Length: 515
Image (cartoon, rainbow, N blue to C red; front, top):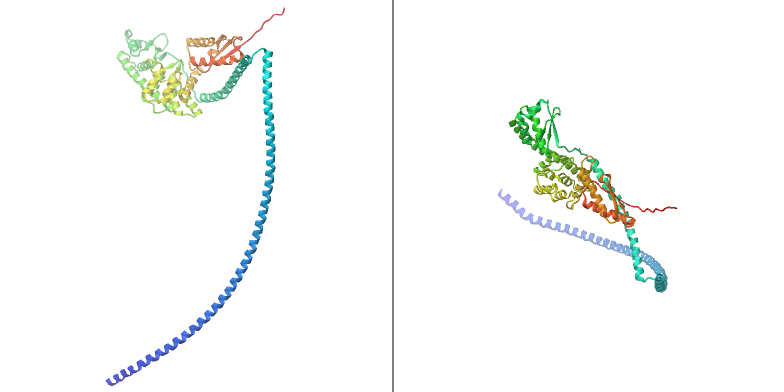
């Protein structure tokens, strides 16, 4: 067994190298055959590539030649077009040069003509000056006046003509201004008046308290008149108990006290217990009610107008104005109406509506205490507005609404107009006869104070004044200026609602008799 193994191993040792050698030679022959085949293919590829390159080269040369020929043709065509365009431009320039030369020739010809005309004008001016001197000398010789004397005469004549023309121009301008501005003002005012209406009351100094029966009169008087004396003392109002059936009259100039007395008396009548102690109690309650009523009325006024942020004390004073009248017009109603009118006018003009209403509502605030404090209601109102921190616009409106100071804002002017509108409503105010007569007399005195006025007559309840002038002293042109001067004097010295019409009349009469 061992021998067999050894023989196998020996066989393997001899066969293995021989197998390896044979395998190596076979692989070498196969590799050489593959290399030879690849070289042959490579030579073939190179030959084909060289042929293709030659073909491409020839094709590229042909394309370049064709492109060159085509580009040359296009360039020649473009050159021809450029040359044609240059020729056309040269022709246009030549034509423009010819036109310009013609225009230059025409300008030179006109310049020569102007020079000749200028020389002619200079010659004519010299001739005119010479003739004018001769004319002046001849006029001086004929008229017997020197040039200075003639100049004075001409100036006087021109002055009269200018005076006439000035009066005519003033009249025309006034008419135009009145037609335009007056119409707009009327539109604004009419619109405001139409949108605002207020009740009017008549001034009164008495109040009437109805009684359930005439027996109540005796109870009001009391034993030995104690009740009526206590009531009159506590309220400061006179009780008039006469034959008027079922009524007692309260008389007093203070409307607040009269209202307190009326409320207290009505409460006593309802209660039935009438004696001095009860009277004192009811008067105190009535005073508190009136105080509450004043605050409520003030609040209602501010709410109605739409003005807020007013100091509570000013609101109370506003309510107090319910019991204050001026020429028969209730002061609170008047203030509310002025506030509403001011707001409407402000909206038409385009200013602050709320501020205008505030100024209108507070413009007469001084009337609430003017009977308790010294000074005019205007000054008192200004002091109250300053005390309670009202703005400068409101203060200026208060102090200027009667013309005491100049209005500084448009709102102040609006309040003035609204105040005049409210006061001028038919039936709103009732003036005394004394005030009426004084105004008529003052109107006539102002008109009579002017030179050339013969007589003057105030008519139409002081709404118009007719002025008769001396015809020898006042010409037609002077009438216009005279009317204007009188109107300015009336505006500055008088206070009146609405407007006053001035009519200047000049009349010349010549009388003769045929015999």
